[in-house]
Amino acid sequence: AVRFAVSLDLVDQQIILFILILTLVCVAIIFFVIFSGSYFINSIVNPVGEVGVTARKIAHGDFNARLAKRNDDEIGELCDTINYMAEELSQSERMKNDFISSISHELRTPLTLILGGIEDVKKHDSLTPRGENSLTLAHRNAKRMLTLINQLLDFRKIVKNKMELKISQSIP
Image (cartoon, rainbow, N blue to C red; front, side):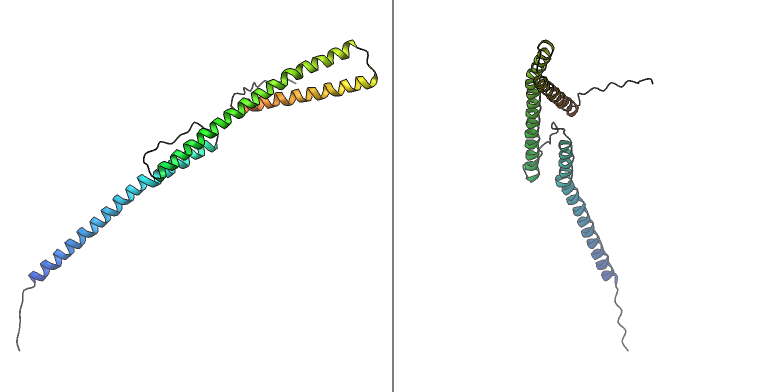
């Protein structure tokens, strides 16, 4: 029988070295994953979240909301597009409000003159029953149109948040 004895110190050192190298590689991979994930979040997820918040503001009528363009990539192009959309919507809203104001005032003035003329004719002229009926019908429709115009102007004030409500209590 032959007995062969060898020291395993060298093998133990190689195993420890292998475990250390493997641990360092794993730590480096974890560090790389954390770093790349952080970069991904900061470069894509956060800007997309900001785009979503700003788009919701614009959808709710805040046409002054804008996005800051940070990079010249797809996200930056999306920011430019949303800013352009907000500007176009803002201009469109201004044009609509100007049109409503203009048309309301342009219709209100002649309608008030027509109503005054109808009332004058009814007071001072003797009319046939048919003429009286026609003037009454014209007067009623002119007043109805004036009410619609006033409601249109009130609606514009409500949309612009410029309508003031005055609450009063009525005592029975």
